[in-house]
Amino acid sequence: MAVLLSLMDVDGCIVPEYIDDCQYMWEDWLMATLELLPLTDLSRCCSVATGEPMPAEDAETLARALKALADPARLRLISMIAAHEDAESCVCDLTEPLGLSQPTVSHHLKVLTDAGFLTRSKRGTWAYYRLVPESLEKVSSLLVA
Picture (spheres, rainbow, N blue to C red):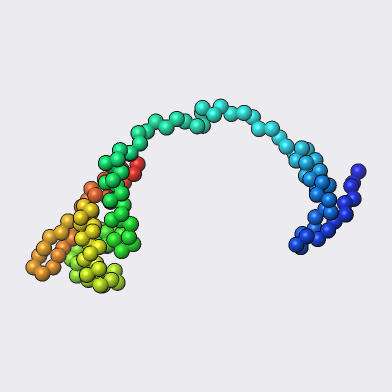
């Protein structure tokens, strides 16, 4: 048996004039199609945390390292130096590709050196920066530990 409802237009949508009629129709449809899901053993899917929380000293070390890396120019500098032969580059080779002034590039390189990601050696008037190979692995190990 079909029930004839009076319909009205609300903000471009056609809805039954009486909300109870609409609710009743949905309840009938839901009850007809509703299937009960089986209960599951929550102990199988929700495990207790077995790892240790990060110690305060490791958190401070990681925060300093991430703060040094949290700059697009510094990330590009690391990738540019890593791409050079022997993972070493002169500051004169980094300024133009980065598109920043030489003092700004030197500042970013100093921050990365102070954070332990780069080493610096002076050759004549130029400074050469080398990537510390294990520095990025140390940061990633603190993240997953």
